[in-house]
Length: 421
Image 1 (cartoon, helix red, strand yellow):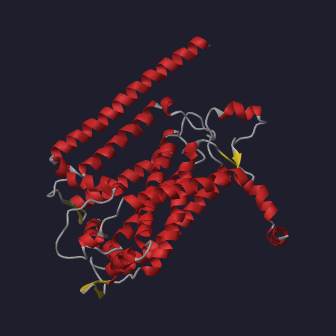
Image 2 (image 1 turned 180 degrees about the horizontal axis):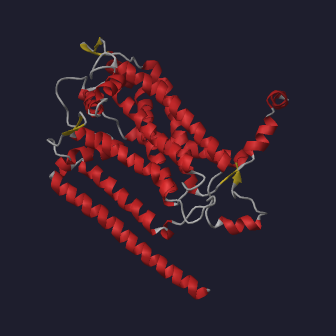
Image 3 (image 1 turned 60 degrees about the vertical axis):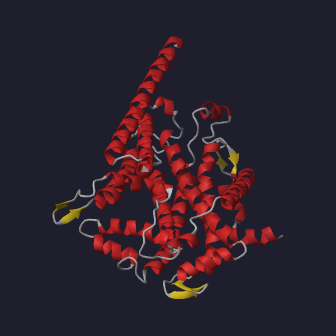
């Protein structure tokens, strides 16, 4: 009776027949996108709880007899509440999992060539989601306003100031003036809880809309199945109710894993670092920024020059030009690798059958992983020159070895196909 009442007004049956009857692929790698979506949902829920308790201000207040910034005091008080610390940890680890799952999802799309026509736009949307997710994590980094978080954020401030010609304008726009200032925390709080979530919701909605329109790519093994089942383009299970039940079960399992990790693995202990002070603690950014951090450590500190009145510093090279160039390369991949055919590609390709692109991805991945290692040069007692040599050798070896092996594999495969013919 209730469904009939809503159906007469909202035409729910038409919505069900048009959207909920669509099929979802059964391959487990397609759940990577769901991990990112579910992590975002968890972030929103826990973020609402934390937002009620957080005070985005640096005014000095009393905390256990000491005068500390209000932002820092509100986070300490949150940790002391029943379930307060565990919810803050869940929020933190959900962000880590969201960024990681988007990255792994992009890797799956890359190695299976699922970015080709007509899915170039969705590749760019996914890349944008990854970048904005890291922006969300970055803006949340400062909010506890401890010595640790202000030191980490100060690195980004000097990177923003190093942008040629417009660095001062960008840094004042993002950081509300010089860092730290009274307006920095409110500005970051606004970006973290309003601006960036709106961008994420918009991009997620656009991603899903394009996905519904274009449908998922399918494994090549589905070509024969498609012919046997009447020529349906996508083989899988209906979204309602089968996939919905699977997704709900998967979300509960993911939430269990996040809570388990949050229970036993602590965050940066802000009570130990204390509020901001003139001292600079030894710290490293989280893993998703270690690539940039490692690249910055490889650049000589005295490397600087001017171009048309704009100053190029080590921060410009490592913190602006290198990330921008890397993202540009990722963005151009669908337009440089169009495949042999000019038609639409609705099936995934076997990575073993794509020697150049697969080896390029492996070599690039090793290069970026070695930059993460470069972030620990001081711990490993390595000089920047030695680390640079290791990076070049490792990435070149990974590319050349994988390319050679894949070429040999494909020659052997083609030879066997010719013998069968």
